[in-house]
Image (cartoon, rainbow, N blue to C red):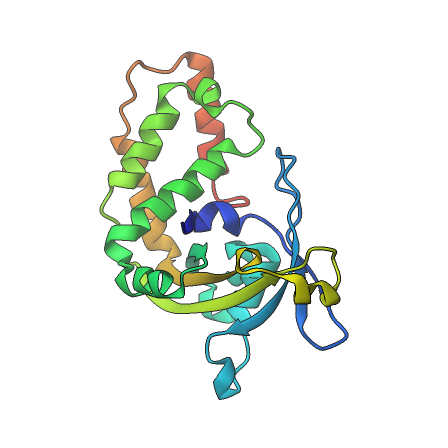
Length: 230
């Protein structure tokens, strides 16, 4: 079964990398904060257009290193917020169909909602308690909103083979359960346009029950510095 992973959530995860003796890239996904899961090292053994002699695009490398915010450092996206939709599994055909069927208009609201959710959840153990009903209503409103101006910029895929013992020789022992494909879809939206629509989302939020004074103050503090680290 394919594992559909949120681009916004995984976009915040950092990757550490080094080069192997054969020139293949070995990547290790560090532990996600708040979990005890240990992630395996892997080698990128194939990727889109490799047979044509093309390299992995810079935006993909930056995303693997530091998430969507790293992609936003590119000159091409200085005026845009970047979102990456991400999906992985061992069925290339199904993943390719997913990528072909991706719709910026239909799929972006969830990408936006997840990144908003992450922003409000940053440094907070229990956001439902911190912000009260405002938090759940905000995520629901962002997910239901009709966002305009979203552009599908590019897509890419890589094929990964995981290492069992942390060295390249172990690749000989791999089964198909230890390899998969990962697809990425890059979408962008003008920063000013995103801000105006986000403000409309905030205005549309009508939590029930109403948050306490302390919860409202906590939410207001996040709104004031919302784009710091967004």
